[in-house]
Image (cartoon, rainbow, N blue to C red; front, side):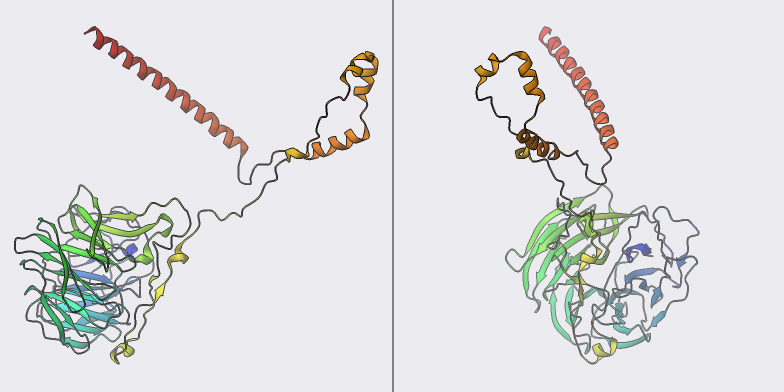
Length: 488
């Protein structure tokens, strides 16, 4: 069974989510513990195996189940207030359980469905790509659905074994699928023909596949010695490079960011998230870093780019499912001192507007996703205009000239000196006036309270004095122990 926070698809933060093991989907807007009587999406008659959020509708989700059906749900605005039991589309064609579903990346209402072998595998899928759906089942069949009419457009019956994982390419003109027979196949979705076929990994455990933006294919699997591997293939499924990851036994699920060309590897049962950069130059796969935690992950989901907080320089956000049934939010941020929008971190990304209608895709048209800028989601922390404050001009002050004949001035009587000091010449008065006007009163910038500044200074002085006393006490202790050591 799979449970998911509705806030993921709405671009909101979700907190800790209680994961249940029933034939329902749990949705929640606020953070914290979910109550026992929380409303559910409860329309399946058996366990839910996989879910996929629609990339073009933030409130639409598709689910595949052991009851051999694919259902499409529309979450009401504001979340659920009662159990949702009626789907907007009920897709029935599979003879066995459905564990693989993928929305088309650019066409409207197209969905692919198929089987995912892993049993009792709780997973989170966030922000996939369209309204046509692809599904696969244990009957070794793949279906491409028109969700708008709830009908199967294409049935693909060319697979010799159970499909495990599927991924559309950038414009949705083909998809790649891995099967239980250890082979990876590139298939034309309109004809069902197998264009390329290769044995990706020697190990017996499931292979995960991911189409990259440039047409390459990324796979994760196991070697003959059960070492976990990451491999890169060109568009004709010729191997470019294969890299060993580690010796753990959990299946690795890749999360691909087409904007930055980064891939995040999350293994079931691992407590680490490794991330790599994919380039066109050797060695092609560049290890960057890893996020380490103490608790192992039972499942993992990723927020689409449109839901990231660009003000905090988030480049990815993951939802980690713990063994105890809690979901933890893990943001990946790049530290930047500048508060401006970071164009290098956020190139244009696929938006929520489909590039093709269902009819156009059926007619054979292909189109890349419509890109949008994330700058609209950026809100500057300070919008106040720059104000220039006038400072007093030191050169405008009157220059005091020395007495030309100090001896003569000393010889004059004191009374004459008094009178001379009391009388100002017109030139001296004229020079003094600009000096007085050139030193205006100090004006604080708007929004600054002088009293609060003084209070902060006073508090800082108290803190500094406390630290000084503490340092003095520590120095006395050090001196005492040093003397004691010398005596010994």
